[in-house]
Length: 272
Image (cartoon, rainbow, N blue to C red; front, side, top):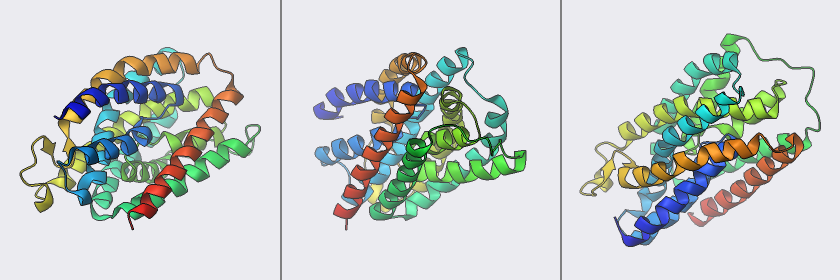
């Protein structure tokens, strides 16, 4: 591992772990752009595979950040267990499927999908001034279908799914703090499924032959460096979230999503 990566990855891990706990996201939406930049600076990886490696590695780190964040939110009683167990099968299926789709997509289309979904999610959070009273949680079959869609998109953009799970649950009259906690819990199965899918999708790729540190699309030295630091700061983020006023927390989450959407759209256009 280069000196640049050795110094930058622990700091990046601490930052993404804090955001994972604070907003109930796996941290992948923050981690992927920075990993893309850092991997590009090393000159070690083929340009056409850098975004895929960053997405896959980001998904792998979410296994650790989600586990840490999940535990912290559960201690606050902020997990909607019915939603968790009924969304989980679809989440796992979608995570495996999304990784295979990403392996076949160029950078532009990945960035466009990311931008569309995070912008819609952020807008939903911003324009909702109070929780609707016309929507309850769907049936178990409906939740499984929602989970499949969420898991697929989450794997495509290398995230834990919080940018979709949180707006969906708040739409279903789940409080913002419980929605964030449940999102953190569901980030664990989607990240495990997505990680396994990216390993499978990256096997026997000729452009990746001879590159040390890769397991499929997963660059494990970066995964370990980021994960070891992020697991310590995720509980801090969760603690801060439960002390913040609900409206302020929703606004911060929406602004974060908008910013990420704009950045990813820029990256997608520049790749053409």
